[in-house]
Length: 198
Image 1: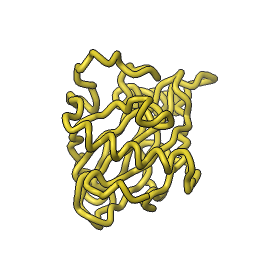
Image 2 (image 1 turned 180 degrees about the horizontal axis):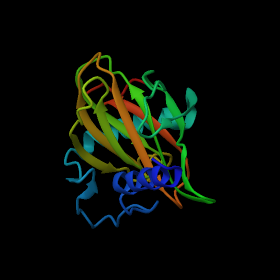
Image 3 (image 1 turned 135 degrees about the vertical axis):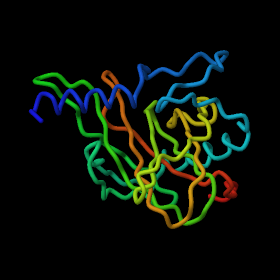
Protein backbone atom coordinates (compact mmCIF):
# COMPACT_ATOMS: atom_id res chain seq x y z
CA UNK A 1 0.00 0.00 0.00
CA UNK A 2 1.44 3.42 -0.89
CA UNK A 3 2.28 5.97 1.81
CA UNK A 4 -0.56 8.41 0.87
CA UNK A 5 -3.10 5.56 0.84
CA UNK A 6 -1.89 4.36 4.24
CA UNK A 7 -2.18 7.89 5.69
CA UNK A 8 -5.67 8.38 4.25
CA UNK A 9 -6.77 4.99 5.62
CA UNK A 10 -5.45 5.93 9.09
CA UNK A 11 -7.12 9.35 8.88
CA UNK A 12 -10.41 7.67 7.95
CA UNK A 13 -10.10 5.44 11.00
CA UNK A 14 -9.58 8.51 13.20
CA UNK A 15 -12.70 10.18 11.83
CA UNK A 16 -14.77 7.00 12.28
CA UNK A 17 -13.51 6.55 15.84
CA UNK A 18 -13.69 10.23 16.80
CA UNK A 19 -16.91 11.26 15.09
CA UNK A 20 -17.39 14.95 14.48
CA UNK A 21 -17.33 16.17 18.08
CA UNK A 22 -15.85 19.34 19.46
CA UNK A 23 -14.03 20.07 22.69
CA UNK A 24 -17.21 21.54 24.17
CA UNK A 25 -19.75 19.39 26.00
CA UNK A 26 -23.28 19.12 24.67
CA UNK A 27 -25.74 21.51 26.34
CA UNK A 28 -26.89 20.15 29.74
CA UNK A 29 -30.51 19.90 28.63
CA UNK A 30 -29.53 17.68 25.70
CA UNK A 31 -29.62 14.03 26.75
CA UNK A 32 -29.16 12.69 23.22
CA UNK A 33 -26.89 9.66 22.96
CA UNK A 34 -23.34 10.09 21.72
CA UNK A 35 -22.37 8.24 18.54
CA UNK A 36 -19.30 6.11 19.10
CA UNK A 37 -17.95 3.02 17.25
CA UNK A 38 -21.06 2.73 15.07
CA UNK A 39 -23.33 2.44 18.10
CA UNK A 40 -25.23 4.87 20.27
CA UNK A 41 -23.69 5.38 23.69
CA UNK A 42 -26.37 6.61 26.06
CA UNK A 43 -25.90 9.00 28.94
CA UNK A 44 -25.28 7.24 32.27
CA UNK A 45 -28.31 6.98 34.55
CA UNK A 46 -26.53 6.43 37.90
CA UNK A 47 -24.93 9.87 37.96
CA UNK A 48 -24.64 9.99 41.78
CA UNK A 49 -22.20 7.06 41.88
CA UNK A 50 -20.27 8.42 38.89
CA UNK A 51 -20.08 11.86 40.49
CA UNK A 52 -18.37 10.19 43.49
CA UNK A 53 -15.97 8.38 41.13
CA UNK A 54 -15.26 11.66 39.30
CA UNK A 55 -14.72 13.53 42.57
CA UNK A 56 -12.24 10.89 43.78
CA UNK A 57 -10.50 10.80 40.39
CA UNK A 58 -10.30 14.60 40.40
CA UNK A 59 -7.95 14.38 43.39
CA UNK A 60 -5.55 12.31 41.26
CA UNK A 61 -6.06 14.54 38.21
CA UNK A 62 -5.08 17.60 40.23
CA UNK A 63 -2.52 16.24 42.72
CA UNK A 64 -1.23 13.01 41.14
CA UNK A 65 0.63 10.83 41.16
CA UNK A 66 1.24 11.58 37.48
CA UNK A 67 2.81 9.55 34.70
CA UNK A 68 3.39 10.75 31.14
CA UNK A 69 2.97 8.21 28.34
CA UNK A 70 2.91 8.35 24.56
CA UNK A 71 0.28 6.02 23.14
CA UNK A 72 1.30 3.50 20.49
CA UNK A 73 0.23 4.42 16.95
CA UNK A 74 -3.36 3.43 16.21
CA UNK A 75 -3.69 0.06 14.47
CA UNK A 76 -0.44 -1.39 15.76
CA UNK A 77 0.48 -3.34 18.87
CA UNK A 78 0.65 -1.40 22.13
CA UNK A 79 2.92 -2.01 25.10
CA UNK A 80 2.11 1.31 26.80
CA UNK A 81 0.63 0.27 30.15
CA UNK A 82 -1.83 2.45 32.11
CA UNK A 83 -2.77 -0.07 34.82
CA UNK A 84 -1.37 1.54 37.98
CA UNK A 85 -4.21 2.32 40.43
CA UNK A 86 -4.94 5.91 41.47
CA UNK A 87 -2.64 7.40 38.83
CA UNK A 88 -3.31 10.28 36.46
CA UNK A 89 -1.79 9.54 33.05
CA UNK A 90 -0.84 12.42 30.80
CA UNK A 91 -1.43 10.65 27.45
CA UNK A 92 -0.05 11.96 24.16
CA UNK A 93 -1.61 10.56 20.99
CA UNK A 94 0.47 10.22 17.80
CA UNK A 95 -0.55 12.56 14.98
CA UNK A 96 -2.32 11.40 11.84
CA UNK A 97 -0.94 13.62 9.09
CA UNK A 98 -1.31 13.97 5.36
CA UNK A 99 1.50 15.86 3.68
CA UNK A 100 1.93 18.94 5.88
CA UNK A 101 -1.50 18.86 7.56
CA UNK A 102 -2.33 17.21 10.86
CA UNK A 103 -5.82 15.72 10.55
CA UNK A 104 -6.14 14.28 14.01
CA UNK A 105 -4.58 12.05 16.64
CA UNK A 106 -5.05 8.38 17.46
CA UNK A 107 -3.29 5.83 19.61
CA UNK A 108 -3.59 2.85 21.92
CA UNK A 109 -2.64 1.97 25.48
CA UNK A 110 -2.97 -1.27 27.47
CA UNK A 111 -5.05 -1.57 30.63
CA UNK A 112 -5.07 -4.77 32.75
CA UNK A 113 -7.65 -4.58 35.56
CA UNK A 114 -6.94 -6.37 38.84
CA UNK A 115 -10.60 -7.24 39.48
CA UNK A 116 -13.63 -8.14 37.38
CA UNK A 117 -15.94 -5.15 37.75
CA UNK A 118 -17.12 -1.98 36.04
CA UNK A 119 -14.46 0.65 35.34
CA UNK A 120 -14.74 4.33 34.47
CA UNK A 121 -12.29 5.85 31.99
CA UNK A 122 -12.20 9.55 32.88
CA UNK A 123 -10.55 12.06 30.55
CA UNK A 124 -9.77 15.77 30.58
CA UNK A 125 -11.17 16.21 27.08
CA UNK A 126 -13.79 14.64 24.87
CA UNK A 127 -12.09 11.73 23.12
CA UNK A 128 -13.48 8.85 21.16
CA UNK A 129 -12.68 5.63 23.00
CA UNK A 130 -12.84 1.98 22.08
CA UNK A 131 -11.87 -0.94 24.32
CA UNK A 132 -10.76 -4.24 22.79
CA UNK A 133 -9.68 -7.53 24.38
CA UNK A 134 -5.99 -7.56 23.37
CA UNK A 135 -5.85 -11.38 23.02
CA UNK A 136 -9.05 -11.95 21.02
CA UNK A 137 -9.40 -8.53 19.34
CA UNK A 138 -13.05 -8.59 20.46
CA UNK A 139 -14.55 -5.17 21.15
CA UNK A 140 -15.94 -4.57 24.64
CA UNK A 141 -19.37 -2.98 24.82
CA UNK A 142 -19.24 0.40 26.49
CA UNK A 143 -21.95 0.96 29.09
CA UNK A 144 -22.56 4.71 29.04
CA UNK A 145 -21.02 8.19 28.95
CA UNK A 146 -21.06 10.68 31.83
CA UNK A 147 -20.34 14.37 31.18
CA UNK A 148 -18.63 15.52 34.37
CA UNK A 149 -20.06 18.81 35.69
CA UNK A 150 -17.44 21.49 36.43
CA UNK A 151 -18.69 21.73 40.02
CA UNK A 152 -17.79 18.03 40.49
CA UNK A 153 -14.34 18.33 38.85
CA UNK A 154 -12.78 21.11 36.82
CA UNK A 155 -9.93 18.90 35.52
CA UNK A 156 -11.92 16.01 34.02
CA UNK A 157 -14.64 16.40 31.37
CA UNK A 158 -16.07 12.98 30.59
CA UNK A 159 -16.22 9.36 31.77
CA UNK A 160 -17.05 6.21 29.82
CA UNK A 161 -17.84 2.99 31.69
CA UNK A 162 -17.27 -0.66 30.75
CA UNK A 163 -17.42 -4.05 32.49
CA UNK A 164 -13.98 -5.69 32.36
CA UNK A 165 -12.53 -9.01 33.53
CA UNK A 166 -9.66 -9.05 36.01
CA UNK A 167 -6.28 -10.16 34.68
CA UNK A 168 -7.22 -9.63 31.02
CA UNK A 169 -5.20 -7.22 28.86
CA UNK A 170 -7.38 -4.64 27.10
CA UNK A 171 -6.23 -2.34 24.31
CA UNK A 172 -7.81 1.07 24.80
CA UNK A 173 -7.95 3.13 21.58
CA UNK A 174 -8.34 6.90 21.73
CA UNK A 175 -8.88 9.35 18.89
CA UNK A 176 -9.31 13.08 18.51
CA UNK A 177 -9.72 15.29 15.48
CA UNK A 178 -8.17 18.72 15.04
CA UNK A 179 -8.62 21.22 16.77
CA UNK A 180 -8.56 18.96 19.85
CA UNK A 181 -5.09 18.70 21.39
CA UNK A 182 -2.98 15.54 21.14
CA UNK A 183 -2.48 15.38 24.91
CA UNK A 184 -5.09 14.67 27.58
CA UNK A 185 -5.35 13.41 31.14
CA UNK A 186 -6.62 9.86 31.80
CA UNK A 187 -7.69 8.38 35.14
CA UNK A 188 -9.15 4.86 35.35
CA UNK A 189 -11.18 3.92 38.42
CA UNK A 190 -13.42 1.09 39.57
CA UNK A 191 -16.98 2.38 39.83
CA UNK A 192 -17.86 0.07 42.76
CA UNK A 193 -14.75 1.06 44.75
CA UNK A 194 -15.24 2.97 48.04
CA UNK A 195 -14.25 6.48 46.96
CA UNK A 196 -14.64 8.12 50.36
CA UNK A 197 -11.09 7.02 51.19
CA UNK A 198 -8.38 8.79 49.22
